[in-house]
Length: 187
Image 1: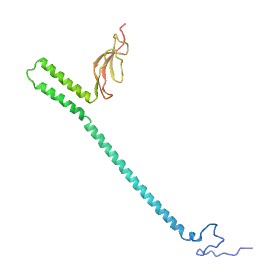
Image 2: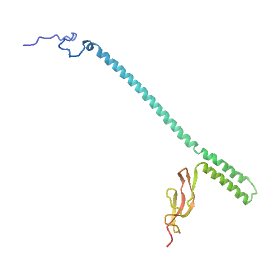
Image 3: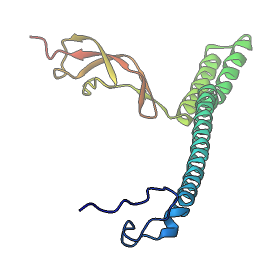
Image 4: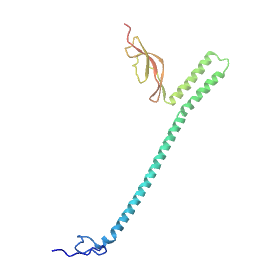
């Protein structure tokens, strides 16, 4: 036996047989579209908020990068300012010494020694120290530059002679000391 034909009119309300359990007939008619529109509007607002936050974060990163570049530029430009200020009195002393006429050797020597003390003070204020190994000190390849090896009474690998002092700024080698390294006693 065949089932009676049902009306397939899309405008017709669904029969009780076609409704699933727990479904609200009014919810199926108008609210799902409204719910989806509300969800879409909420999602679009979140996207707009996130986009705004992204733009603000990007601008902040760019500002930090720009400020860092300016700080590095200023540090390079004015990093030697303190050291230069320390050297000005040394230059003044040298110019004053050259301006003096009819100086004795003793006066000249005293002036040069005073100028050297000023220079040493400038070095100390700016954390600049000498590297001047004594004969017999251990050779340090991080602070010394070996020019040659020579036979000497010192043990092999020790500093035999310092040819030129080196310098450190803080703990960084500005110029290594030039040294001759002992090859051990001559045979």
